[in-house]
Figure (cartoon, rainbow, N blue to C red):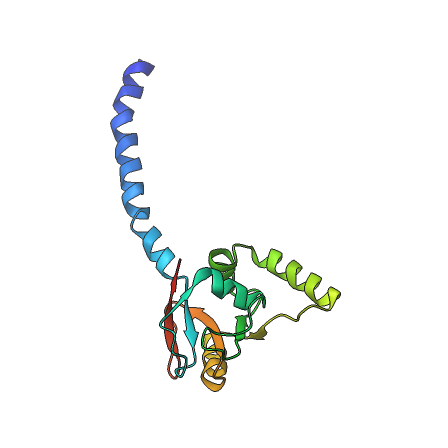
Length: 153
């Protein structure tokens, strides 16, 4: 009797799993696309920026653009979801690891962290007002007065 019942419930279980996969499957690419976009001052000639170089800018291991202009990175608030995404994708570190890195840099007198801005609009305003600035904003953020550059590997 239980064998018959389990055989009858197997198609139902498979159908439920398929429906679940269909319901959650398309959402994954949408979530990935919600990450971030990188913005620079409109006078910056760059159309792309290498992920590794971008990481070096935000960790202050590189301080000039290829054109020779100084780089001024602008970070988001520590608890911002966009900062979490950017840190994982570009810096290859969690936000906590980035904070620990900066504590070490400050303590050793080597460097101070990038300026921190409270939200997308503040980052856009900062980047628009500083020629060498680079920042990141949520993928859906409005970006008037700045240029969006593509991050390449």
